[in-house]
Amino acid sequence: MRVEQFLIANAAAHGAKTALVTERKRLRYDELDALSSRLAAALAANGVERGDRVLVFMENCWEAAVAIFAILKAGAVFSPINASTKADKLAYVIGDCEAAAILTQARLMPVVTQARALSDRPLFVASTGAPSGQVPDGAASFEDCLEFEPAPVGHGGIDIDLAMLIYTSGSTGRPKGVMMTHRNIDAAAESITTYLGNTPDDIILNVLPLAFDYGLYQLLMAMRLGATLVLEKSFAFPQAIFERIRTEKVTGFPLVPTMAALILQMRDLAPGFLPSLRYLSNTAAALPPAHIARLRELFPGVRLYSMYGLTECKRCTYLPPEELDRRPGSVGIAIPNTEAIVVDDEGKRVPPGVAGELVIRGPHVMQGYWRNEAATRQMLRPGPQPWEKRLHTGDLFRTDAEGFLYFVGRKDDIIKTRGEKVAPKEVEAVLHAHPGIAEAVVTGVPDPVLGHAIAALVVLRDESVSERDIIRHCAGHLEDFMVPKRVEFRQELPKTDTGKVSRRLAAEALGTAE
Picture 1 (cartoon, rainbow, N blue to C red):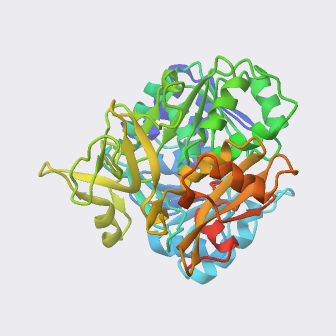
Picture 2 (cartoon, rainbow, N blue to C red):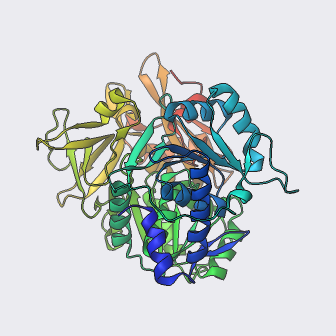
């Protein structure tokens, strides 16, 4: 199924149902469908054709949801861009994907204007108006585009066409455009909603950026199900989000570890304070077992899904909530209709307990990186079957005797110290188990004797905790070579634009980036 059919089918089946709730507007399915059809007609009238790439450079808002489905209805490919993106990076993306258009907001127009000057590429720009109703210079009015007469979808595309180009964070260089077809997205959405047990009755609250695939899929999955999405701009004011959850009777709440850590630092929350919740989900990074235990105390009866994924295939694994007590450190098993195996450097499966690279097979695996054959070859490699390419994640995992997966670390994150290999995640798990620590990230610092020494950046929950206390705690739970030699305190950990704790930025903060 093509992704725009998610919306079209549900608008026809139950158009009066609420599809989207935002701070400024509530949209029924038939309203969202009509608005996106009008915008699709405007895009076509301004030269956007089947297969063209169109950027959605917006914060979380109803216009962004309309834009995504309008682009698809026009037969084009949408590319969500984080609203915090700076002009030079935006210019790179515009040039890299040869964008035909960009849909944005008035407050972001200065960045768009700078990026257009840097990229020197002609493209159609539509922006939401300024508060006075004036259209920013160099842009058409988004509101005027919504006045176009809608035309029936007639682009002739099929489900193996590209639907989305989502750019990676670029932590190892220039951003790469991950190519996802309609079929890729449909397969991922079907698999995830199956194991989460989602139904059309679900009301899902999303505070994660739509430019972050975990946030984006909340919209796509809700529209596929015929569910309701409550879209918020951020988690900056948790109490306001909690009130929204209570008011809207939200049933599903996707988290990332930094959000979980923030919730667990709050002292005035009573167990069961959000009674409508049916499930919590987590990805972006594994939750420390200590955080899982405390979340379960705070949300009794709520199913907690610990998950692992990456942009190149959306989702890889999930831990069935009933397994949390037995294996809290696991990220589970392969999601439905997916195979996840751990292999050695020759691509052969390794036995339980042995670390190796996680490799993924499934219909949700990307087509490759946009016009980057070298990077594509590195990630998509031939499998044992002559027709297939398998996704090599670059992440180290091990399995237990029953096949449940455990994240060990990124291949390039492993710290070599005193001739031993240390996975930062193992040290971080011990740090997170300390009651006085809210968050921690571990990296290696160059050392003339050790090669690299273990260093940690820590956010405290209890300000009386000292560096000596933390090192003593680690020494009681880790082998000697794994104990941090250096601990520094911060008010918050360095994060990427999507809110994920960044080990690279932590290394830079410690003055150790090489």
